[in-house]
Image: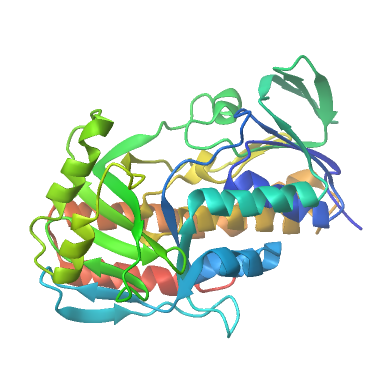
Length: 375
């Protein structure tokens, strides 16, 4: 089998890095993955996923595991603050005809599914380890690791997230993450029978819920926070309940009443990043949040990172010329990733300014249709 790089190192064990490991092992590559966190944890509550993400899961071979442990449904139900329905945003079925067009799952559960698949693929996983130095020449890349080892690879993939150490080493002048002026709250709560699919309320803030299993859902709320400042976790329940006070819908008020100290509340200021091309230098290439971290307005940040992994493996298997493969990878990914990052930012701007709901809905529909197209 043609493969432009046979011995590959992946730096970072998040969704993108694990997906790259799984797919590259299918193509016959020898893959090492290093992850700084010795416990390989994934923090967070739920994660909403569109049909394009479920399609990527199908290619990776984890879709059935996802469907067993997560939730899938069609459409996003939109409501006024009092609960009046105002529409159903369609979510195309792009994974398989029998698989709904969207869904959600708890982040730690998805991380476990991917970690199990990564180990089962034959990837050599080393936890509590990262690099200290990268040196490359025309023939390969030599890596010094924090555990004292030194190894040589044909290709290094940086998938170590928004504050990537790999990006700093390879592209020291790349843009830095920037705060968008919004924050998102998430919490895990019991799932009322009335919540069948992703549901959102249009108001001063944008709350929503999405089932993550047969018995649980997660709540998400975006709010305008002009200053990125620390919030005391002890105040999380009170502040989150306060954001929902102006929504008289009995369903949402019932959800509000359930928020407490045991609701696994996560507060995250929203930051983003879009690194201009190139995304590779020599034999080191960057994928996922390392080069295109997005806000959650299109529920597609994980999607485009996982797609990066699939496309990179595809291009590496299409030629024995590494530079050709990496340039083809960038060409296929740029426009799609740019669209997600910039459209997500624009949706946030509209929300903060209480702007045009028609523009907001139009961007959502156009983006979801674009994501349904093949990668």
